[in-house]
Amino acid sequence: MKRIRRYLVAGILVWAPLAVTYLLLNFAVNIMDRTLRFIPADLRPEILLQQLIGSENPVHIPGLGIILALTVLLLTGFLAANFVGRAFVGGWEALMHRIPIVRSIYSGAKHFAEMVFSDSSQSFKNVLLIEYPRKGLYSLAFQTSSELGEVQGRTGEDVVCCFVPTTPNPTSGFIIIVPRKDITVLDMEVDEALRMIISLGVVIPTWRKGPTRELPVAEPDEPA
Image 1 (tube, rainbow, N blue to C red):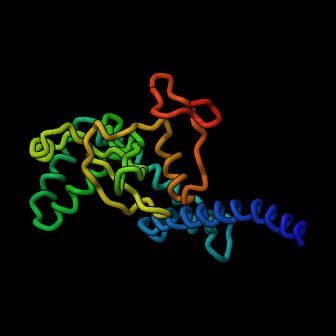
Image 2: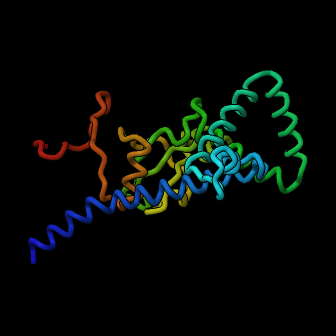
Image 3: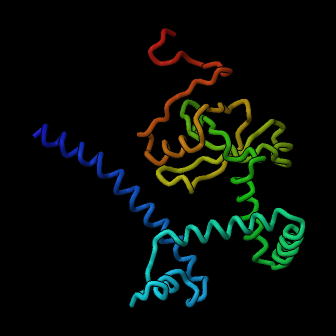
């Protein structure tokens, strides 16, 4: 029975990652393919291919939506990067900020996107270790901002805003304000920390030791 169980576990370890990868990629491709619905029906690729090869039914090619979405993003970025595009985007944002309810949602979404995707931003660039929810217990967190204005002035300390994600869903969580002196910046990358969180701590990233950081305690398998 132990041998049979070992074989079953080995089979699961082979097929489970493949199945999850396939399902996630299939879901992503299907979502992106829905962008083709914005194209007029007569100009959609499946209709054009149907007419080209003389098929009775539309010819669907998975992944065309990804190509369309990437093309739209690249063209939008190219136009927004030049003078005319910046003027258009500025006018569009001015219009959005005049609509009472929309401006709150749009401003929040824009600031979040700039914070996450901007290369100049330090948000979500560092993985932090903080003592939370009490001294002696540690949690992983991500730095979101360090210029906190009134919050920093009221506390009288150099503080950092940290996002503490929940597990196994790291898209939810909460923010806490932590003094910089109580923060330890880890060597692990953000994607490695996310894998650790999603896996409930089962997947531990390989530690590439930082050459400039001193350790507060001895490393495992080394004398203290």
